[in-house]
Length: 405
Ligand code: UTP
Image (cartoon, rainbow, N blue to C red):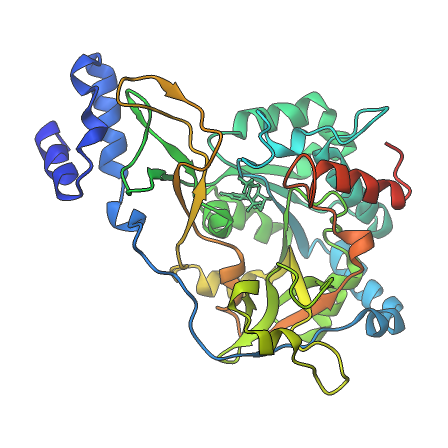
């Protein structure tokens, strides 16, 4: 697209601010900027877009800790067998920017140690190493990064010798980006010649993995299940044999790890059925009545919060890959340049990012095994430095689990 065509496109969407510094740029940078603008789909970043999930919500029960304990051996053996046959791979979602944490580098490079170095990436890899030891086979580890942190993430793994993992089984892939806007929907400039782009949420992981050529590679290795998990839960147990075994034996296309809620009004997304499909109901969607509703065993009907640890069967992922996921509009702190060309690093949210989310993929499936885990042993997310879900709280939980910091 030439400058006239770009101008026409920008006028149509009222985004002419993107050419504010155009005339002062060298020719090469002008072409680069026009290319970036040509690739933006402005219809995708409509701030008035509504993505609320519709559908009748009903409770969905879980395989509880007691039920799991009673079948532990059978489930674990089934999982270990699948791991031995290389039927499962781990997908580490590490493309986020961790804006709440405010770290400069990738979130996984955060040192949670106190008297020694213990990085988030290291905690996760060491957990996966235990699975490898139990099964006697390497589990492929796919790491999703973004343009913003890909180089730093790869370098960190390299520098730390993959934390003892076999690098032949570690694959990196880069997720897509989406433009960020101010609260009026105007796309920000990050530099005079670059629009502000940020990772487009964790929902694009399968498409990005496929685009990177990794789907064919892992299928050739025998992989039938992908265990997607968040980078920031330092107690995360990925490719957990019992969970994998239980999901395979259940015949369901997905499995979701959940924890029992702390209180009926805890602010977590909870597993449910939506028009008969597995789904996640956000805490603000639950009415007071639903929040306190009991099932026939006298327990809360909506009691199982998700912890971003899902197993997906590859077959169904491939079948649903072409379906569009709903777009979520999230307020975030967005560094940018102002009208005078000064770099601004905001202290408070100043605009929107546009994201698709992995949890929306669940509703595309016909069924789900909901698998309860003990939150004191498996859920220590680090979203902030201090307070709730923080480095401080995660350190306490690691210590309570016997990890020396
Ligand atoms: P969060 O929703 O907590 O986002 O990510 P975040 O970017 O880490 O942190 P904030 O909200 O900016 O403070 C949950 C998981 O999804 C991954 C994150 O890396 C984390 O593992 N994620 C998030 C991606 O891989 N890509 C994204 O675009 C967003």
